[in-house]
Image 1 (tube, rainbow, N blue to C red):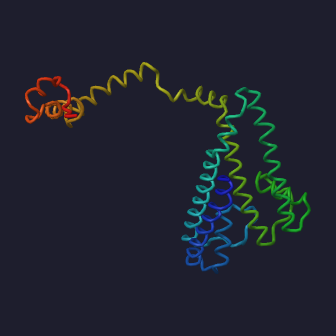
Image 2: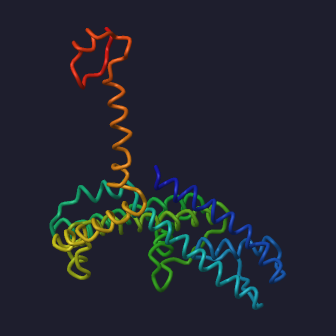
Image 3: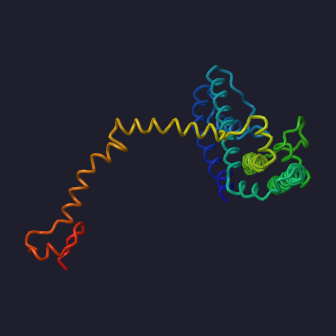
Length: 272
């Protein structure tokens, strides 16, 4: 549920808000109508395979905005990838993988391509239903958008607003799925072992850890001494604690000589 919320609610909302903001900036910089500016910004932010408009910036301010909006789009897609790789579903799935080379190869060459293929089939059917295409055309178009081959696999393109919105959601969801797959593969014990070989263990040796602890203790003691912590604080509290203990164990003067003599020394006074 969290993955679907991020991919289909939070990210599209952020893209829409940023598109509205940059629409006004492009309107002022390039003189475009707000509709044309919105279509251009939305195409850049959502990384649509088929642009909604054919205009392009011609001024220096427009070029600066183009670089800025492309950077924001890249950062946003990277955030989606990182969030998807850290989801609880990804962690749970990774914990169930077999910690062997065969288990890793099975996930890389069988499960991952199969999951991506099922995603493309589902998105292709939705696109075909919205645009009135055949299922083959819908599948090939979505494969071109998600996989990014050098040449398009089909010549069809969305013509309806619903189709373009579905393309945008499909692109975002594909980024989320890619992040989830990266997280699953990256958590495999064999991948972790390879990273340890390449970069070394992130943990310190036991000897170094022990030495660090020994070095820290004198510093903490010195800090406690100068800030009235630790030993000095205990020394200051000793007289107060002794006075409180004496008050608790003292026999009141009205108790009488016989009661005072019979009461055990050091025990708190209790008239009952």
